[in-house]
Image 1 (cartoon, helix red, strand yellow):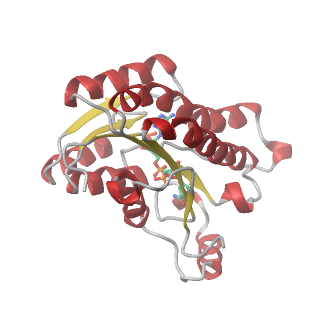
Image 2 (cartoon, protein in one colour):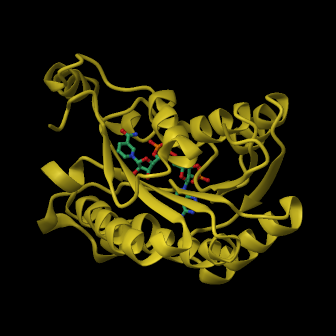
Length: 246
Ligand SMILES: NC(=O)c1ccc[n+]([C@@H]2O[C@H](COP(=O)([O-])OP(=O)(O)OC[C@H]3O[C@@H](n4cnc5c(N)ncnc54)[C@H](OP(=O)(O)O)[C@@H]3O)[C@@H](O)[C@H]2O)c1
């Protein structure tokens, strides 16, 4: 479904980003894998991309660093000759009730989840516009729609990402660059392993499908959004939450 396409996946070392990188590789894509730190997990995901028949390129850096982001996109162009798909997946949580939230935790979450997506998109959309084909996929969260205690910073960032998705979709449609968001529920990754077991059990019981999701289940939706199967879909938010938000 993605033969010959180049994708940049931010936050690709593990969790949802790693699942997207490997799913896209399985479907023929070349993958630039970004992550903030040079970890074994990042190298292992890149090796898996190669094993699956894609070509991998690792780029280590912070998506909220504008200078780094320019280099990341230039690296993808040098390595593969094009940039066709961007998945803004890098994200962090720093949960705390508002009264106790440090200003640093507010800005860190906004910087990575929202400003990082802005910077990566601004850099990566230029080649997409030039070639008149592109896909931007933003990984949002149901916290943006439903709210969650302790996540005012994260909820604001992810709601901002949905607004960003909709405005950019209008702006770039005439260039055949489609922009969509996956609005994700609770998925089994290192991020959610920070949640106490009892709370996680309660959350699972509230999900109509009766369980939390797997990273691959988000990757499959992103594959649809990245491929020609979604040629008439832009500016939308696709809810991947097992019915956790309806
Ligand atoms: N898991 C869920 O239940 C859930 C639900 C809704 C939405 N989401 C969203 O899905 C996305 C992926 O989440 P996940 O659960 O897979 O998270 P995860 O397992 O914690 O992985 C996050 C990835 O993002 C990278 N990252 C963090 N900050 C970065 C930065 N400033 N620059 C570059 N890379 C950075 C991490 O890199 P390092 O390891 O190098 O730090 C890691 O590779 C996030 O946007 C998250 O908000 C997740």
